View 1: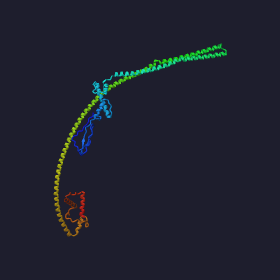
View 2: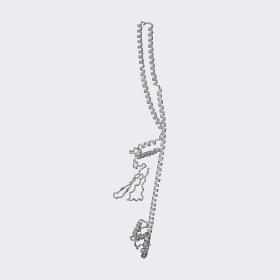
View 3: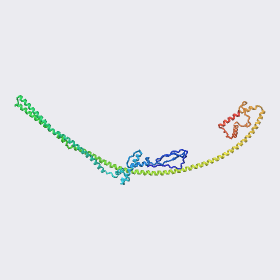
View 4: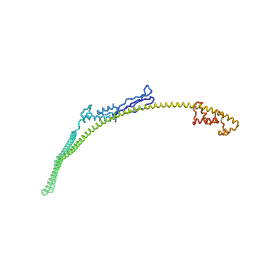
Length: 464
C-alpha cells in the first residue's frame, strides 16, 4: 500500500507580477495548473484535489474493479503490466485468506464458484492412500483394457490362421486322390503299351511278360505309397502349425509383458503419490510461511509509515521553528543595520557640515592672504619698474634668461594679478580656484585629464 504526500503551504506570499514556478508533484498528487481569470489580468492558481493511487500507480477506483474481477477469477479486458500485477496480487491475497478459513473450518463470507473450488481443495486434507488407490485403479483399468484388446486381437489372428490351415488341410485329400488317380492312369497306359509290345513280339505268355507286369505293379505301388507318404507329411505339417498356434506360451509371454508394464506403472503411481503428498505438504507449509511473512511485512510497513509520519511531523515542526527563528533574526539584523545606517548618516552630516564650515574659514583666510599678496606684489612691481626704468634696457635680457630664453624668449604679459614670486603651478592653481568660485563648480583636481588639459591651455594663453 502506497501513501501519498500533500504539500502544506505556510505563509506564502505570491507576487502577481512574477510568473510562478511549477510545484514538484509527488506520487498520488496531480499537477497544479495556473489559468487566468475573466475579470483580472493576473493568473489565479487553481489546485485540483490529489488522486490517491496504490503501489502499482493505479487509482483506487480502478483498483477496486480489478479486485472484483480477481475475486471472481474473471480475466481483465484491457490488461497492462501494472494492472495484471495488481490482479495477480489480489488473487494471491484471496487464496491466502481462503486457505486460512479452510484450515480453521470457517465458512466463506462471499462465496462464488472460484472461491468455493479453492476452499474445497484446501478444506479437504490430502489423503495419500486414497490418492494412491485412485491412481492404481486407473493404472489397472488401463492395462486391463490393453490386455483384453491384445487377447481379442490374438484370438482373432489365431482363429484366422487356424481357419486357413483347416481349409488347406481339407484340400489335401482331394489333391492327393487326384494324384493317385493320375498314377493309376499312367500305370494302366504302361500296362497297355507293354501288352501291345509283347503281343507284337509274340512273347505274351513268356516269363518276360510276367516279369514286366510285376515290375509295372511294383512301380504303381511305389508311386501310390509315395503319394500317401506326402499326403501324411502335409497333414502333419498343418497339424503342427495348428499346435503352434494354440501353444499357450505365446499368450503367456504377451500377458507377462503386459503385467510387467502394469507393475512398473503401479510403482510409478506409488512414487507419484509420494511426490504429490510431499509437494502438498510443502505447499501448505510455504503458504503458511508466506502468510506469516506477508502479515509481518505489512505490520512492519505500517510501523515504518507511522514512524516516518511522526518523523516528518517533527521535521515540519523543526522547520517552522527554524523559519520563525531565522526570520526573527533577519528582522533584528535589519533593525540593527538600519539603526547603524542612521547613526552613520548623522555622523556623515555632522562631518560634512563641519568640513563645509572649515572650508569657508580656509577660503576667507586664503582670500585675505591673496589680497595681501596682491598688494605686496603691486609694491614690488612698482619698485621693479622704477629700478628697471633707471637701468634702461638691460633688464630685458635678465628677465628673458630667467624664463629660459634670453632676448628672443617670449615676454610675460603685463598682469598685475599674478604675483611674480609665485610659480606657474601656483598661479594655475590660483586661477582654477578663482574660476571654480565664480562658476560655483567643483575644482579640477591635479593629476586628472581635465586638469592637465586646462594647465596646458592656461600656459598657452599665458605665453602666447
